[in-house]
Length: 222
Ligand code: ADP
Ligand code: NI
Image: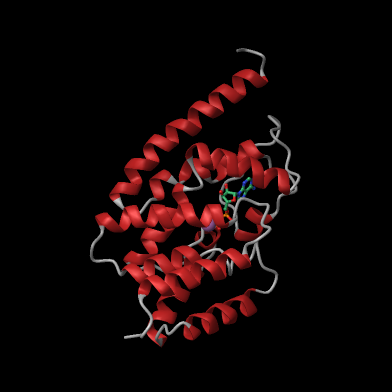
């Protein structure tokens, strides 16, 4: 057991993440992280057997080692491990957090190397996915697409199916609207926990209504 209280450890982790993601302009800033933490707390209330510190630490750290946000993933991983040791996480706790943050991303599910997540990881994955859908999800997709110079929409470019991870990251012919069909509309059915599934259903409706309205306006119909 560490001498530091869990609340002190989580405050230190929050500061660490805020510093690492400062200046993000892709929808992965500290506001995203704070919403994921809030979602994770809400899901934790329904899943009392999950470890609180491991879940929330992973929620805070899930994007600081992401290959789309950092150029040297191994070095970012070592930095997180050293930091966690420095705030008195024991080796099992460090390993638990690293396993979750290395295996929870959507892009990981497009590789041959998918690993089943423990309950704590399932909660963080749901918490992150909830922030990718609904009104916030629509806003983040547009923000991300704008940052990467994606086209808004092109009716002649069909959404891609069965993408590999590198195809998913190749944005050459990507459009913001296609991203909904390629990923965001699929997230509700992939939720792990019953509560997240229920919330996701409502957010799905927000996205389908948006897409219907978008296409009607595009075609000058409303
Ligand atoms: P993960 O980190 O789980 O692999 P992503 O990196 O795919 O997830 O996505 C994180 C956020 O970036 C999501 O909110 C998503 O909508 C947005 N995003 C990812 N790829 C695109 C894209 N091609 N166009 C628009 N938004 C995207
Ligand atoms: Ni995230």
